[in-house]
Image: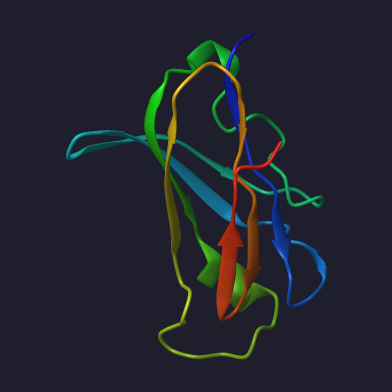
Length: 117
């Protein structure tokens, strides 16, 4: 089985998928942080392609950076400056070739994540 990475972002305050949320993927090698790609979520709160496709998959440490503040500004969340959650970074490891799914449940004042399926 080849490994790959996906996500799904749900706006729990509005009760809908988080459409148009920008996500950056980084590979971590010790102190080095290498940007691999930038994607955005679609109408279903998912990216149109795998965040890390099978042909590029390597085990190791990664970081997903969710640009929550920009999304919240566009969707009419009560304004504040600075936003409580402007950027949501999630660091995680992938230890074997498998499907890794890292969902984000987001609201203006909290978030949660887990290893999904």
